[in-house]
Image 1 (tube, rainbow, N blue to C red):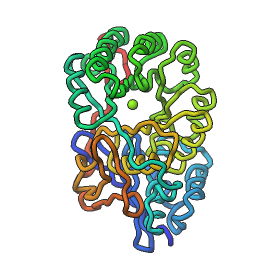
Image 2 (image 1 turned 90 degrees about the vertical axis):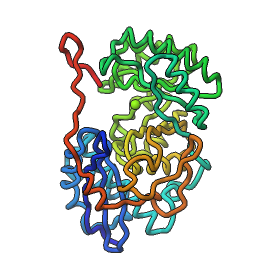
Image 3 (image 1 turned 135 degrees about the vertical axis):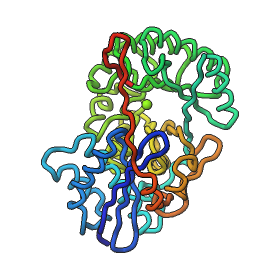
Image 4 (image 1 turned 180 degrees about the vertical axis):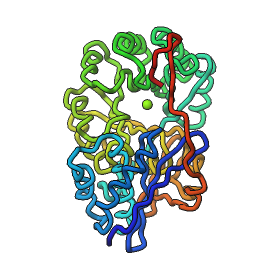
Length: 377
Ligand SMILES: [Mg+2]
């Protein structure tokens, strides 16, 4: 079997863009992949064009070899954009391999270690009381986890005020849902240690399952400060490409949950390596998944075959996003994703529909504080 084409599909999803690819072979089997750098979809597509000549004529079964070729073949190691492109291609190659052998991708990763995958949705609420009401409604639908972001005013997060409001939210939600629902707080890389440390310490009394990305991610050595002062579990890594960006956090045991993004880290090939490295330090994975149906399917297969797994992010239930582009998506029931039984990833793709929902110019975040200085989204 040989690769004959690699096609890019930047797709408008109604309020944001997504990036999908289709890898075709001379055997008539194709694989579907997704790249994960939001607001950089066209850059990822251009990177796929650079990688394409390395792939045409190659055997798609040689997934590890092709990963090395793509990552190292340009002399300069691949950065995050290139790794987003590599991720999309790698996921498609695993889809092809599964289809060629007639087995789901989780069978290629070692087989099922669990029967279903527990997930968490995103919830919100204008006040702490509204948030608590939404948490109860979410739990009544079968979810065992709730996640929300630290509160903002408009799009601006004011650190001290947000910390006080998050404390009130946590108290209201814990009181509402009791001990049966786990709480996740996402800071979205918006704080510095002087604000993140008191926030995390104040929330410890409510026993959150984890606090996500309390710090900006450029300098992970700063997590040593967190480790010295904070005992609440931390989840980190959704922006990281490759095992090397995770290295310090794993080896120095600075996080308890790895937020691997299979569409950025380097696909299922690299996600598996990061997950296995985490296992040696008793770190669980909690894969990042703000993306489309391919990302959800790829996460599902990884989670089904990985013993050190905590919880899966699932803000959009299968079937509710791009149903025409992906007429077959994975199954969901009572807060859990279920193992697909069809070969490969277990999803299908309509190329014509993808072209009909072509990329639209979106607004990447441009947020300023009242004094005009830039602040993280
Ligand atoms: Mg996040």
